[in-house]
Length: 137
Image (cartoon, rainbow, N blue to C red; front, side, top):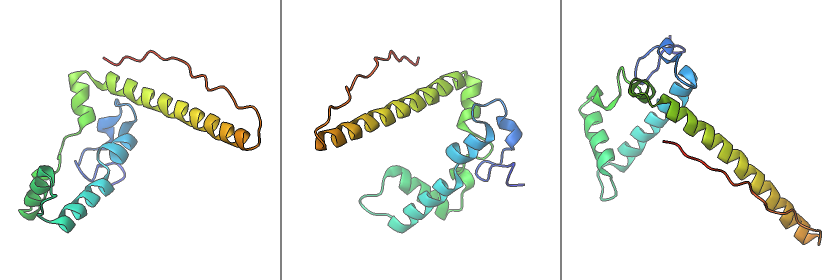
């Protein structure tokens, strides 16, 4: 049952079939149960201190009251954004992030090569990066 139902919101996997990334994205990113558990432990461990944020304090108070309102039961940002027509924008942003990560990996590789070449007195690779026009509206 848990393989096809989100532990956090209780929605079934079929609810996400039209969402980019589908149910896998939802349970691994949007409603990652380990993230919720980590946050709960973090708030409980810190308790109420001067460094506690308003969000942490609110979450801890709701948890102590055993109020389920701290969980997005029956709700997911990807489903809400779909109804607002912003899923395409989110998808474009994810694609852009992936492209930027690839470019960063390429730059890191060139820098490492140049550092190695410099230490061996070889000629470095030129650091020419393509200009990209990015606009997400």
